[in-house]
Image (cartoon, rainbow, N blue to C red):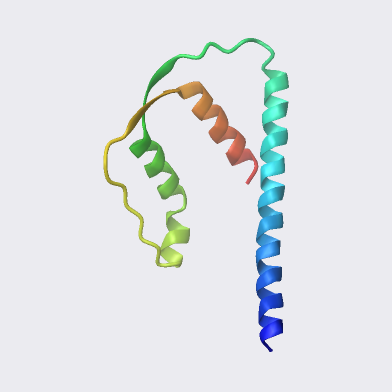
Length: 99
């Protein structure tokens, strides 16, 4: 019986790993595709980006799932980093297209 449990867990985790590998593969392919389409050089302007704001957007996106699983999330602090907003938006579009 214990062997069956281990087999079930192994199959469960293997399935999740395989799903995530597939998602990452799609993300990488999309990024490569985008880089080919964007043959023009991109001007990167670094600006202050709130990690709190980005994190809040991500938490809100998964709020229903967290509620179903009784997961409580919260953010503290006001971290700000210098980043290119264009790159962040491009990454979000790429990730969203791979869901």
